[in-house]
Image (cartoon, rainbow, N blue to C red):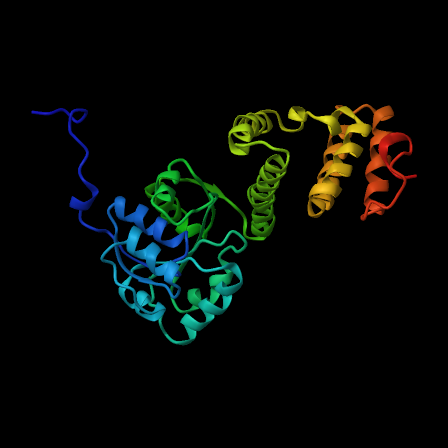
Amino acid sequence: MNTPHQTEPRDPSARPARLTVGVVGAGRVGPALARALQQAGHRPVAVSGVSDASRRRAAELLPDVPLVTPGEVLARADLVLLTVPDDTLPALVEGLAETGAIRPGQLLVHTSGRYGTAVLDPARRAGALPLALHPAMTFTGTMVDVQRLAGCSFGVTAPDELRLAAEALVIEMGGEAEWIAEESRPLYHAALSLGANHLVTLVAQAMELLRTAGVEHPDRMLGPLLGAALDNALRSGDAALTGPVARGDAGTVAAHVSELRKHAPATVAGYLAMARTTADRALAHGLLKPELAEDLLGVLAREAEDPFGSGDRDAPGGGPR
């Protein structure tokens, strides 16, 4: 007879489904989370989506799950995932509550990073059990998203009596719960957006500039560099700062701005803003010498005041006087 350690894990599809799952808003997030819950033994039964892209995502990640109206999703599901844009969520919740679509005891989960559970108050008054489960992950709308949920942190806000239920759902999706207070949700979301969303913009701009400079495969060049920079930053914070700004190379920074004005003027404002922020942090943490910071900050200030590059570029320090 097999010991417990020798017993093979059961196929999740062979386990009795514990909850029926519905998705309102078949964007990139909802179908992936429902698929993860399906792999944990739950049973997706309905999904709503309007656009062709939403319907394709639902068909790929939740095959054979019918596409129905939001009201019908709530009628069929014990656990409903509200995965709609942040600005749409309040009106959606109010509308569902006003039409009587919400059933007492129904788990209503939204995935917005911005909101906690207060946005679900109309549903709570109708008897729903409100949870805010925000996966701190970027989504593609494909099966790779389900794999990326393994070890993913979820920003979780829930009433005390539902904390165990919230944590259990996160674990079943492969994630780890990080508790966020209701009042801290906007700051929490701003932090994630600052890091992840702006990173995409910075990387895309860097690749465009490298192509302009003649680099055939900018992704291959940036991959190892950015991977190392991210790892160093996560390990060491500001101590990982390197480059001309952290060193106080004012002339190099001025040369950068001059080239950006010629080849990619739309990137100048972002470069100057990030350079100023980097300089301030490097100075505060003792990485940038005060005597070098003065020239550097002077260059950045002059360049910011001269957005069209009309000043005297031959002046000392590489910037207009």
